[in-house]
Image (spheres, rainbow, N blue to C red):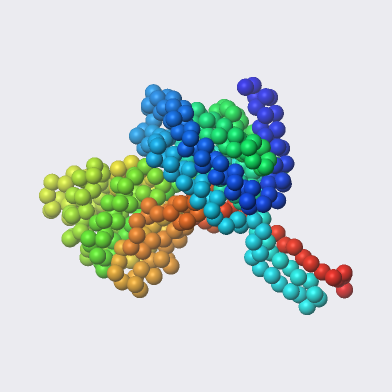
Amino acid sequence: METAEIETRVEEMARKARHASLALATVPRKDKDRMLKALADLLESSASTLMEENRKDLEAGKAAGLSNALLDRLSLSQDRLSGMAGGVREVAGLDDPVGEVLETTERPNGLVIRKIRVPIGVVGIIFESRPNVTVDCAALCLKSGNACILRGGKEAFHTNTALAALIARALRESSLPGDSVQLVPTTDRYALHCLLKMDAYIQCIIPRGGESLIRFVAENSLIPVIKHYKGVCTLYIDKAANLEMAKKLVVNAKCQRPGVCNAIENLLLHRETAGKFLPEIARALAAEGVELRLDASAAAIIKQAGDIPFEAATDKDWTEEYLAPILAIKTVPSTEAAIEAINTFGSGHSDGIVTADESTAQTFLTGVDSATVYWNASTRFTDGFEFGMGAEIGISTDKLHARGPMGLKELCTYKYTITGQGTVKR
């Protein structure tokens, strides 16, 4: 497309989305749920077609030199498609947030003021290589009464186009507005520039992807942006930790799926625990193919323990989102020092403590300034599905207006309705 054609097309999409959002905000729950269940059925019945389109993207990604972590995010399988369909059905089964009365106040003059949950309006979602985002975001936006415009990355263009076609089919076969979900039909970066200027029609932008994409969106958008720059997540092993539990949690949080934002990138060990625990966990991580980056104190312990490979950590390692089997390990003298390290080097995403001491745990849970903070659990649970949201539209490390996994309620704002009886101000 020529630039003028892209501008016209994106503005037309935004205008149609705004019109659709006003109608969608009043659609009854039963109609939204019917459409979502139909979409889930289509995902399952179209599995072979979707995986064939996905293979085209995977082949192109390999030729372009995408990392294994990105190829994993891009890949569709029968299990992942079943999971996507299951997530859509779970969203359909959740309570409809639209119209929920949050507060009711009766004033002395007889006015009754109600604070009511309502959709945001039009949400623009900009994402990279994960095709499940197309379905998750469409389902959550529709259920919460929002229209959405999806702009996926070129890595998943064939897959996203096929998924968007199924969503359009489900919309056509339902009573929902046909422009409720639209996919930008080009990977030309100029379309993104245009989308970010449509503040007359779009109320919110949610970017999902690497830090460079999110910073570009935040710096160029005229529309409010909900951000998640990166996931530098940390697990702290306290001196009162159950070390068997700690070993299981560290291996899970790092190795279960290292290419995702809620996998840990840093491990902090209390100095009273490090001498005993570090050699054991280092061997377990090495057996999983994890490269270790150690501070001087941790390195001294490992050198005494025997032939366990590692590299010396640099200042950059503590703030790096590897999205790979690499883990930086530091020893700390106290829980307070662990909290300070996380608040200094972390990204405010997901951090946890392993300890049997409740007082220490509460100090950590209160002191760590992150969206999700764990006690004796893997950080891998920071996920909309795991939180019972059905899916998520993103994980916000902002504090306004949403934080952590964003589900249906986070896709709503509120308005006040005021009822009087001919009441006038005196």
